[in-house]
Amino acid sequence: MTNSAVFDLLFNEARTYSHWLNKQIPDDTLREIYDLCKMGSTSANCQPIRIIFVKTPKAKEQLRPCLFEGNIEKTMAAPVTAIFAYDMEFYNQLPTTFPHVDARPWFTQTPDDTHNHAFRNGTLQAAYFMLATRAKGIDCGPMSGFNTAMVDNVFLNGTSYRSNFLCNLGFGDRAKEYARLPRLSFEDTCQIR
Image 1 (cartoon, rainbow, N blue to C red):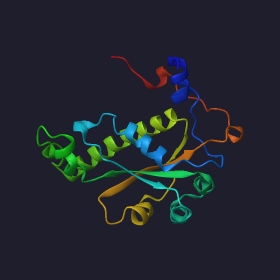
Image 2: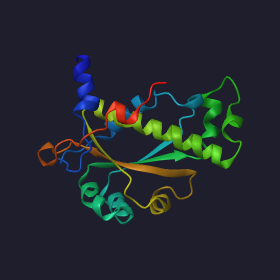
Image 3: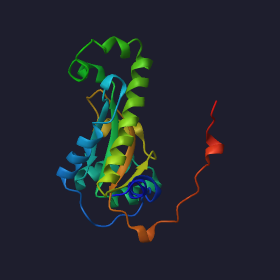
Image 4: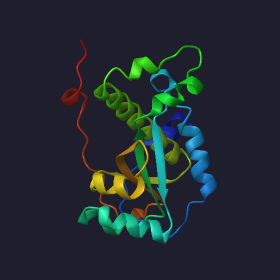
């Protein structure tokens, strides 16, 4: 695959999908995607992402009341919905993931400090996951239109996890999508100093 084809696959032709073909994603493929995602860099290799794959009809029905109205139909139709969460106690894994020094104090000075590291690095890992998903030829539909407290209560209760955002996964129905929306230019968003 040429560099141009890789860029097209990951960015230029990639879309946020709302319509899905009736084609399932095997559990082994989800494992393969995670195994790519986990190789991305995080602060002190802290790896705070936690993912709940909502796939069964029962789990989908549990998710339904957590969704904002505009996200219900597309989420129910998606083969899989990933709940991207972050672990507020990620630092407990640091003796394994960063064994050459006790890095736990770096992340536990205050609750806000812990949250910021968990949220920031968990979000970064979720982006890695979406790129790995696209690299495997599967489409993504990330969204934030849901009740986080409800999702946390239904899917994360009794854990130290907190939901970040949802992402529908599947094979997008290209015939039903709008044309790509405009993007802001370099000049609109960037500075070189």
